[in-house]
Length: 232
Image 1 (cartoon, rainbow, N blue to C red):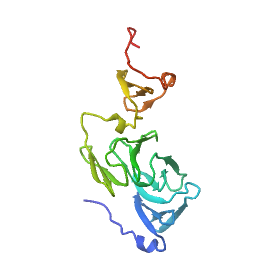
Image 2 (cartoon, rainbow, N blue to C red; image 1 turned 90 degrees about the vertical axis):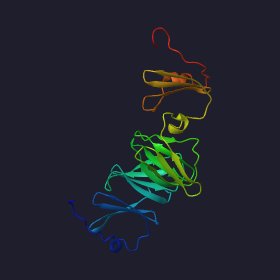
Image 3 (cartoon, rainbow, N blue to C red; image 1 turned 135 degrees about the vertical axis):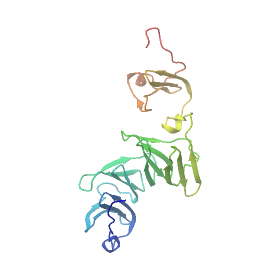
Image 4 (cartoon, rainbow, N blue to C red; image 1 turned 30 degrees about the vertical axis):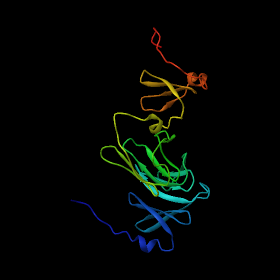
């Protein structure tokens, strides 16, 4: 094999900092500290100390490099995303609290393991909280194996395996709100779901669709969905 291995003198150059997590990004090394600092090192030493007071008041908890972006989890619902250290960060808001780990799956979804639940960000940055998960507290880690199965670890409840199958639990996989479902109809690659609380529409990628029809039928019990002779 070819390549060059470099010894990074991190211990010498990080003295005085209470490092709680590390992640690499190219030739850079990112770190978060117990004093809520985000540090960036290159081979010559510290090049950036990012203060987070203006971004979040929560404590920093974890650090991940996902698809080239740096994600920083917090003790609240905030997740801080950096493309590079010299550009402003983006703050994402999850519907779970106490972020313990952040991972990316084969679909490009960013999964969040938290103290009170599990969920993921779609590519649109919309957060979907999973429902009815058998392990739903103090989630500490998550991986996806080569078959597409998800393994989820909890500090207090053990390990859960979510296996792929030909059946899909939409309530859990897309975070569909809990409601009595009366009818399901497929039309032009969209799923129309009639519930006691209105009409839900999801496209082929299971992204939720909101339009004049869903607004008009909000709060209305939908009992049946059919297509008329004109195809609408």
